[in-house]
View 1 (tube, rainbow, N blue to C red):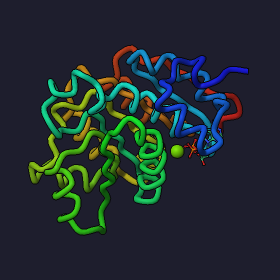
View 2: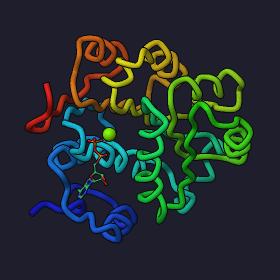
View 3: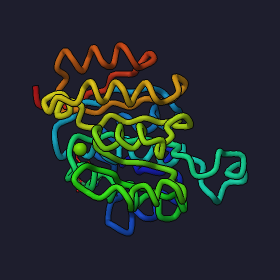
View 4: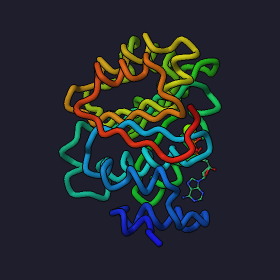
Length: 219
Ligand code: ADP
Ligand code: MG
């Protein structure tokens, strides 16, 4: 049986997963992890509940430079290294919980931002330094417009539950966010379904993405 370690996952990420009893990768994770860990752009399609969060979360966390790494001092201090965009507050919070779990032993700072909450705590956190930002499109754009969210050092961008972002009318906001990040970034797009508008988004903003679809994903 394949383990996370077999797929190249760092021991500091395997350890917190094991503490939660997560030891065997789900299909979408087994199919995407070794590719995404290399920095390749990737489109992952699998049904709801199939484990897409860790399929992008592990590569994002592993490829972020940790304060424990010697090259951390070379980074522009406190600027987000990774951005994860999710359609709703609830989904952003769920994603953030999993990312925080696997970031624990790496010492990375994770911030969740969404609308309907006060700006001050989010601005304070951004000003004190954050490595990974998880958020909903509208609030992310607001914070970028206010110049407190600097996306110019993002090396990994995740568009999570892309079909739901389309349904909620967020594609223009998502496109705006994409253009605020460097073209050299790794882009990971995950979705339960692949409507034409999402395929077109991927074509415009991703570089030779690998397409991976796990069995029994919904049409
Ligand atoms: P999706 O985004 O595809 O809808 P999630 O990433 O939210 O699915 O995962 C659904 C649930 O499965 C979560 O509670 C998550 O912690 C759990 N999970 C993910 N991967 C594994 C795994 N390899 N082993 C056990 N549980 C897992
Ligand atoms: Mg999900």
